[in-house]
Image (cartoon, rainbow, N blue to C red):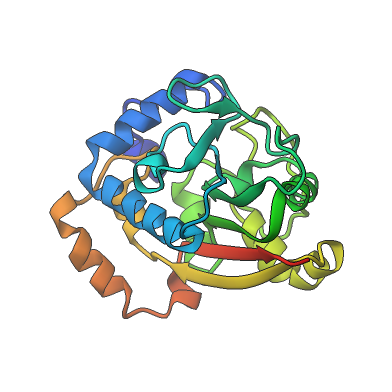
Length: 252
Protein backbone atom coordinates (compact mmCIF):
# COMPACT_ATOMS: atom_id res chain seq x y z
CA UNK A 1 0.00 0.00 0.00
CA UNK A 2 2.77 2.44 0.93
CA UNK A 3 4.67 1.59 -2.23
CA UNK A 4 1.57 2.16 -4.36
CA UNK A 5 1.03 5.64 -2.91
CA UNK A 6 4.65 6.60 -3.59
CA UNK A 7 4.82 5.05 -7.06
CA UNK A 8 6.30 7.29 -9.73
CA UNK A 9 3.55 8.34 -12.19
CA UNK A 10 5.67 7.50 -15.24
CA UNK A 11 6.04 3.86 -14.18
CA UNK A 12 2.48 3.19 -13.02
CA UNK A 13 0.85 0.38 -14.98
CA UNK A 14 3.88 -0.35 -17.18
CA UNK A 15 5.29 -3.81 -17.86
CA UNK A 16 8.92 -4.17 -16.83
CA UNK A 17 9.49 -6.26 -19.94
CA UNK A 18 8.41 -3.47 -22.29
CA UNK A 19 11.51 -1.72 -23.76
CA UNK A 20 9.68 1.59 -23.30
CA UNK A 21 9.91 1.07 -19.55
CA UNK A 22 13.72 1.04 -19.77
CA UNK A 23 13.67 4.30 -21.71
CA UNK A 24 11.32 5.88 -19.16
CA UNK A 25 13.65 4.80 -16.36
CA UNK A 26 16.52 6.48 -18.18
CA UNK A 27 14.38 9.64 -18.22
CA UNK A 28 13.56 9.28 -14.53
CA UNK A 29 17.22 8.95 -13.50
CA UNK A 30 18.12 12.03 -15.53
CA UNK A 31 15.25 14.05 -14.03
CA UNK A 32 15.94 13.25 -10.34
CA UNK A 33 19.15 14.98 -9.17
CA UNK A 34 19.43 12.96 -5.96
CA UNK A 35 19.06 9.66 -7.83
CA UNK A 36 21.50 10.70 -10.56
CA UNK A 37 24.14 11.53 -7.93
CA UNK A 38 23.57 8.13 -6.36
CA UNK A 39 24.09 6.36 -9.69
CA UNK A 40 27.16 8.50 -10.34
CA UNK A 41 28.66 7.28 -7.06
CA UNK A 42 27.89 3.65 -7.92
CA UNK A 43 29.45 4.06 -11.36
CA UNK A 44 32.54 5.72 -9.88
CA UNK A 45 32.96 2.72 -7.57
CA UNK A 46 32.66 0.30 -10.50
CA UNK A 47 35.04 2.35 -12.65
CA UNK A 48 37.57 2.45 -9.82
CA UNK A 49 37.64 -1.37 -9.75
CA UNK A 50 37.85 -1.58 -13.56
CA UNK A 51 40.72 0.90 -13.65
CA UNK A 52 42.58 1.03 -16.97
CA UNK A 53 41.20 -2.25 -18.27
CA UNK A 54 40.10 -1.83 -21.90
CA UNK A 55 37.68 -4.64 -22.76
CA UNK A 56 34.88 -3.91 -20.29
CA UNK A 57 31.35 -5.25 -20.78
CA UNK A 58 28.46 -3.63 -18.93
CA UNK A 59 25.37 -5.82 -18.68
CA UNK A 60 21.94 -4.20 -18.37
CA UNK A 61 23.01 -0.74 -19.51
CA UNK A 62 19.66 0.45 -20.82
CA UNK A 63 18.54 2.97 -18.21
CA UNK A 64 21.93 4.14 -16.98
CA UNK A 65 24.94 6.24 -17.96
CA UNK A 66 27.95 4.11 -16.95
CA UNK A 67 29.66 4.88 -20.28
CA UNK A 68 29.92 8.54 -19.27
CA UNK A 69 32.10 7.43 -16.36
CA UNK A 70 33.85 4.53 -18.12
CA UNK A 71 34.11 5.47 -21.82
CA UNK A 72 35.71 2.18 -22.85
CA UNK A 73 32.69 0.18 -21.65
CA UNK A 74 30.72 -1.91 -24.15
CA UNK A 75 27.12 -1.25 -23.19
CA UNK A 76 24.52 -3.98 -23.59
CA UNK A 77 20.90 -4.80 -22.89
CA UNK A 78 18.82 -7.95 -23.21
CA UNK A 79 16.05 -6.04 -25.03
CA UNK A 80 16.35 -3.90 -28.14
CA UNK A 81 17.10 -0.51 -26.56
CA UNK A 82 18.32 2.69 -28.26
CA UNK A 83 21.76 3.89 -27.24
CA UNK A 84 23.42 0.59 -26.31
CA UNK A 85 26.25 -1.08 -28.23
CA UNK A 86 24.77 -4.56 -28.45
CA UNK A 87 21.96 -6.88 -27.42
CA UNK A 88 23.33 -9.56 -25.11
CA UNK A 89 21.91 -12.32 -22.93
CA UNK A 90 24.00 -12.77 -19.77
CA UNK A 91 23.64 -16.55 -20.11
CA UNK A 92 24.89 -16.60 -23.74
CA UNK A 93 27.54 -13.91 -24.03
CA UNK A 94 28.61 -13.10 -27.62
CA UNK A 95 32.34 -12.97 -26.83
CA UNK A 96 35.31 -15.23 -27.46
CA UNK A 97 37.03 -17.12 -24.65
CA UNK A 98 39.23 -14.93 -22.41
CA UNK A 99 38.40 -11.81 -24.42
CA UNK A 100 37.06 -9.52 -21.67
CA UNK A 101 39.01 -7.69 -18.99
CA UNK A 102 35.96 -7.07 -16.83
CA UNK A 103 32.18 -7.40 -16.61
CA UNK A 104 30.20 -4.80 -14.67
CA UNK A 105 26.54 -4.50 -13.79
CA UNK A 106 24.24 -2.37 -11.68
CA UNK A 107 21.02 -3.89 -10.33
CA UNK A 108 21.22 -6.72 -12.88
CA UNK A 109 22.53 -9.90 -11.20
CA UNK A 110 19.31 -10.38 -9.22
CA UNK A 111 17.33 -10.48 -12.48
CA UNK A 112 19.38 -13.28 -14.11
CA UNK A 113 17.18 -16.41 -14.09
CA UNK A 114 20.10 -18.90 -13.98
CA UNK A 115 23.13 -17.31 -12.33
CA UNK A 116 25.10 -20.56 -12.45
CA UNK A 117 24.87 -20.43 -16.24
CA UNK A 118 25.89 -16.76 -16.23
CA UNK A 119 28.87 -17.38 -13.94
CA UNK A 120 30.00 -20.20 -16.24
CA UNK A 121 29.80 -17.79 -19.18
CA UNK A 122 31.68 -15.10 -17.23
CA UNK A 123 34.41 -17.63 -16.40
CA UNK A 124 34.74 -18.44 -20.08
CA UNK A 125 34.80 -14.86 -21.37
CA UNK A 126 36.90 -13.05 -18.75
CA UNK A 127 40.71 -13.16 -18.87
CA UNK A 128 42.69 -14.47 -15.87
CA UNK A 129 43.10 -11.57 -13.47
CA UNK A 130 39.92 -9.99 -14.79
CA UNK A 131 37.06 -8.66 -12.72
CA UNK A 132 33.35 -9.23 -12.23
CA UNK A 133 32.03 -6.26 -10.28
CA UNK A 134 28.48 -5.25 -9.46
CA UNK A 135 26.28 -3.06 -7.29
CA UNK A 136 23.32 -5.09 -6.07
CA UNK A 137 20.64 -5.20 -3.37
CA UNK A 138 21.87 -6.69 -0.10
CA UNK A 139 20.16 -8.47 2.74
CA UNK A 140 20.42 -6.90 6.19
CA UNK A 141 17.93 -6.74 9.07
CA UNK A 142 16.85 -3.28 7.88
CA UNK A 143 16.77 -3.93 4.14
CA UNK A 144 14.54 -7.01 4.45
CA UNK A 145 11.68 -4.83 5.71
CA UNK A 146 12.24 -2.09 3.13
CA UNK A 147 12.45 -4.47 0.18
CA UNK A 148 9.40 -6.38 1.38
CA UNK A 149 7.19 -3.29 1.89
CA UNK A 150 8.43 -0.52 -0.42
CA UNK A 151 9.86 -2.32 -3.42
CA UNK A 152 7.90 -3.98 -6.23
CA UNK A 153 10.34 -6.87 -6.79
CA UNK A 154 10.38 -10.14 -4.79
CA UNK A 155 12.92 -10.40 -1.98
CA UNK A 156 13.29 -14.00 -0.80
CA UNK A 157 16.43 -14.78 1.27
CA UNK A 158 15.40 -18.42 1.74
CA UNK A 159 15.20 -19.14 -2.01
CA UNK A 160 17.66 -21.00 -4.22
CA UNK A 161 19.88 -19.70 -7.01
CA UNK A 162 17.35 -19.84 -9.84
CA UNK A 163 14.52 -17.37 -10.48
CA UNK A 164 11.21 -18.39 -12.07
CA UNK A 165 11.32 -16.37 -15.30
CA UNK A 166 8.21 -14.32 -15.98
CA UNK A 167 10.09 -12.16 -18.50
CA UNK A 168 13.60 -10.82 -19.21
CA UNK A 169 13.29 -8.01 -16.64
CA UNK A 170 10.26 -8.83 -14.49
CA UNK A 171 11.75 -12.00 -13.03
CA UNK A 172 13.77 -11.13 -9.94
CA UNK A 173 14.85 -11.96 -6.41
CA UNK A 174 16.49 -8.99 -4.71
CA UNK A 175 18.13 -11.32 -2.18
CA UNK A 176 19.94 -13.36 -4.86
CA UNK A 177 23.37 -11.61 -4.62
CA UNK A 178 23.38 -12.12 -0.84
CA UNK A 179 22.31 -15.75 -1.31
CA UNK A 180 25.11 -16.57 -3.76
CA UNK A 181 28.00 -14.54 -2.32
CA UNK A 182 27.21 -14.55 1.42
CA UNK A 183 24.78 -17.29 2.48
CA UNK A 184 26.15 -19.82 -0.01
CA UNK A 185 29.73 -18.52 -0.24
CA UNK A 186 31.18 -22.01 0.37
CA UNK A 187 28.98 -23.47 -2.37
CA UNK A 188 29.98 -20.65 -4.74
CA UNK A 189 33.67 -21.39 -4.07
CA UNK A 190 33.07 -25.09 -4.73
CA UNK A 191 31.19 -24.52 -8.00
CA UNK A 192 33.37 -21.69 -9.30
CA UNK A 193 36.82 -22.17 -7.79
CA UNK A 194 38.51 -19.79 -10.23
CA UNK A 195 36.50 -16.85 -8.90
CA UNK A 196 37.68 -15.22 -5.69
CA UNK A 197 35.40 -12.88 -3.74
CA UNK A 198 37.81 -9.97 -3.38
CA UNK A 199 35.42 -7.62 -1.58
CA UNK A 200 31.85 -7.17 -0.45
CA UNK A 201 31.15 -3.66 0.79
CA UNK A 202 27.61 -3.12 2.15
CA UNK A 203 26.45 0.48 1.70
CA UNK A 204 23.65 3.03 1.37
CA UNK A 205 21.14 2.34 4.16
CA UNK A 206 18.77 5.20 3.24
CA UNK A 207 19.95 7.04 0.13
CA UNK A 208 18.18 4.85 -2.41
CA UNK A 209 14.90 4.93 -0.48
CA UNK A 210 15.07 8.71 -0.20
CA UNK A 211 15.81 8.98 -3.92
CA UNK A 212 12.69 7.01 -4.77
CA UNK A 213 14.74 4.87 -7.14
CA UNK A 214 13.35 4.37 -10.63
CA UNK A 215 9.90 3.31 -9.42
CA UNK A 216 8.93 5.72 -6.62
CA UNK A 217 8.70 9.48 -6.18
CA UNK A 218 11.72 11.35 -4.86
CA UNK A 219 11.54 12.29 -1.18
CA UNK A 220 14.47 14.74 -0.92
CA UNK A 221 16.19 17.27 -3.24
CA UNK A 222 19.53 16.59 -4.89
CA UNK A 223 21.47 19.12 -2.82
CA UNK A 224 20.94 16.98 0.30
CA UNK A 225 22.84 14.03 -1.16
CA UNK A 226 26.24 14.77 0.50
CA UNK A 227 24.60 15.24 3.91
CA UNK A 228 22.65 11.98 3.61
CA UNK A 229 25.76 10.05 2.59
CA UNK A 230 27.74 11.58 5.46
CA UNK A 231 25.03 10.51 7.92
CA UNK A 232 24.94 7.00 6.44
CA UNK A 233 28.69 6.57 6.84
CA UNK A 234 28.25 6.62 10.62
CA UNK A 235 25.87 3.64 10.66
CA UNK A 236 26.71 -0.04 10.96
CA UNK A 237 26.49 -1.07 7.31
CA UNK A 238 26.12 -4.79 8.07
CA UNK A 239 22.89 -3.99 9.88
CA UNK A 240 21.45 -1.12 7.84
CA UNK A 241 22.82 -1.27 4.27
CA UNK A 242 20.46 -1.86 1.36
CA UNK A 243 23.11 -2.40 -1.33
CA UNK A 244 26.58 -3.85 -1.68
CA UNK A 245 29.53 -3.39 -4.00
CA UNK A 246 30.62 -6.93 -4.89
CA UNK A 247 34.02 -7.48 -6.50
CA UNK A 248 35.19 -10.83 -7.85
CA UNK A 249 38.55 -11.64 -9.44
CA UNK A 250 39.26 -14.53 -11.81
CA UNK A 251 42.28 -16.72 -11.14
CA UNK A 252 44.23 -18.90 -13.56
